[in-house]
Amino acid sequence: MNLQEQISRIQEMMGVINESEHNYIYDPNHYLEDLKFFYSDVNHYEPEEETLEKIQMSIDEVKEIKNSLPLRIYRGIDTEHPQNSDHNNSCWSTDKRVSERFGDKVIVGIISDPKYIDWEETIRTRTMFPQEKEINIPNSEGVEIVDTYYI
Image (cartoon, one colour):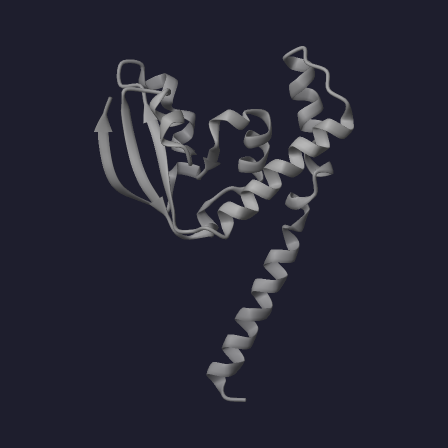
């Protein structure tokens, strides 16, 4: 085996190791306590089985997103009250109409590399706020801005 083949083999093995280290994010039970706390905070009770089903739906959506990259994403900005749009510049949506409800300016981006997406936070927020179709990209790193428009 030549040097390039050895490097490729090691990179392949590291990918498997890195992926398996994060498999816990695809376990609905990982989010259960967070959701119980969230639901109690908003005075909402839901049987554990239903909560686990909702979490699993979010996990399935996220897996689908991961397999659909590159992906067009949207971020609504309230230019009159920019503090309302901050969220560490990380909240994007896969639904254009959702982002338009968050502000008068919409940034359109493309995310291609899955390493920039916080998959765990995306699953968590999609479970808590499924209507937002959020995708969490810390500091918008890795997002290629392709358009901006005002509503």
